[in-house]
Image (cartoon, rainbow, N blue to C red; front, side, top):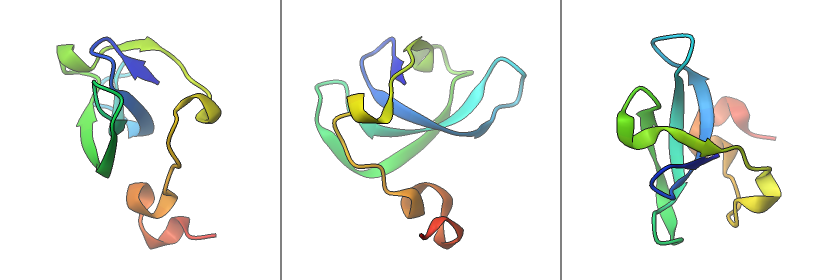
Length: 74
């Protein structure tokens, strides 16, 4: 998903409320891929969702192990 600040994040879990999610940043505001995902939640006003993206629109390969640990290994 793309946030209002332009970052691209992936939802990795439920947030503290039914309207929020735990998310990890994959691409920064200026379009640069991050070397490691940054964890946050959409309860933060800076991390409000602007649009939902398909994985192919993210412009970066999603490393499942970085997001969910060794249990996500293929």
